[in-house]
Image (cartoon, rainbow, N blue to C red):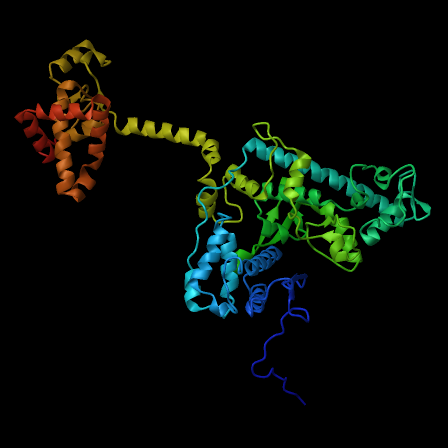
Length: 591
């Protein structure tokens, strides 16, 4: 017997993922992880406005909504809170978003743009309000007016040397953290196996002495050493006992937030990952080995802004794979401890929390917010990487991502067009890095010009490197053609060697045997005027038959005299010159 499933009654709506008050929302992402709660309880209600924004926030952070990363959800929550706080100071007195006018939207937007030139906040609020069915259609149309990103960045890319120094500092940090974690993990495993940990001495805590193995096991089981456990330092501290006095006891087995940030720096330098991709990065998959016997790793990435193309895969070999292997080794013990505490995570980026006020597994380890709270500033202060000017550098993941594309001259996580137009072309460093290519291109262009426009201008026949007999013939105009003078008509590039040249006299402009002197200038000026008239009267015929000749003629004249002198020379042209040019263009002189 089969029974028909009961369907929801008409008008049923899914319950909001909020607490009993409806003012604290918990978001569950596509992997089943919960984020939040995101509270609105301490904000002014403004009638129904707060409740309407909460419903829109839930819609935007739902599995089918536009906010698919924890960072996007946090940004949306922060901006919704800010919006509610700003309504009264801006004089926006509404009881529902159905009353939000175009003028009020522009007042809020102007307030935001007066403080921040980047359109991010406006774009996020536009997305949130679009998911409010109460917002009037006219206001939605006004909101559709987008703001372009400033073409000029506040910060340019790092120099190649600065980029290398930042990466080197991060790599040194990750290597030190990985060695510390691996060493202490091996000590812990030895303790579990009933073997000596290899560390002499103990620390007095809770009324007795604890050896290294016991301390590491306690740390592994709870994720921290309780500061209220009676731990004191009569002779040595936990960090000194374990051989890393500059690092907190908690970080014997787990990387610090700054060390995990160093891993992020390396991944940005190597692959140009942006923040949303980094925060979604899971432990790589080992796909096999390359021809050198080194591991080939696969990372399955998520870039929410790509929508249906958001999921993609990268392969890593060589130095890139070794960086990931360091990161996996540095963070593996933290993931194992979180799993044994009932809070498993497959995130590559994980760190020990610096807040010891809780023992809940989700708070003991950080898998989100690794760049919040001035992490980049703290990292920069710790490492003191010097810029090219000797001043300390402030490290920025966005600048590193920009520099990676400029230095490597390729797209990273974006299309070739976006990489070229948005990232590389506006950067002065791009021109500096390709200066050799630009110079070679200029040299090739000059060579091409010499090859295609070889008629030479000489002020006097004595400048021509030929026999005295030929120079005398040049002076006496016995070598003249319709455009210049020919020094050797038996060795033309337009006819077999040893045979007389029969090419059009217009091709003299492209012949290495041709020269022009001041005596030929009136005729050349006449030819220039005739070509200009032809370009105006019959542009199609000119483009197909005479444009190249005109360009070569301009090159010869540019070598010779100024535009004013060309005008004067045209005035001195004889009827014979004009008749010769007219016959030349009518092809009556062709052999």
